[in-house]
Length: 193
Image (cartoon, rainbow, N blue to C red; front, side, top):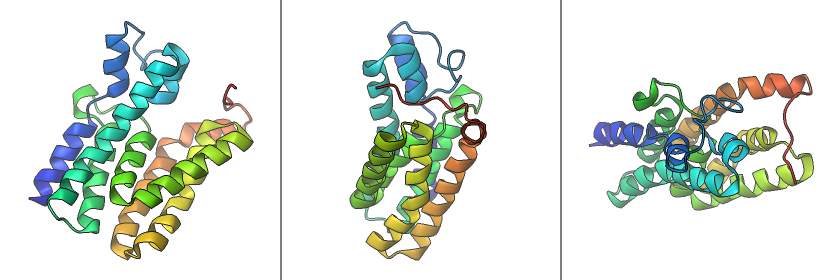
């Protein structure tokens, strides 16, 4: 059953909310505008707050729903973490869109909220605090991501699931490598008030 759930999570993760929402609102394809990334931050640039919020919620649900289904079926936390990994990989490498997807933060947050509500909440609070202070979205996400394995372990005391969450966090750093380069060169965009 677990392999089927992981594959299903991957397929759900592969549905690009940014592309669907931009098409529905007659906006440009997010893969060809702004940062060329099909994610909520880029949709904010090209379509405004409502389109970005819809993308953020949709991408979050892609992570939340598969993990919540696994919970309903009574799976253990490490199995749920593997389902979260499947959804995340679907978002980053979507089979429906040539394996070129987004950076995975919203899908990760959604799955984290289902895995451990308090760990997900700790991520969100950290992101909001750092964003308020430093005004750089990607840096806020990376700092929250860096702290997440610690949050997750302190809350769940599950080393196997924490290891899988740690892999997800490392992958988020990998998907943000271009942002990291821009930050190091002082070229990363700041959050507009």
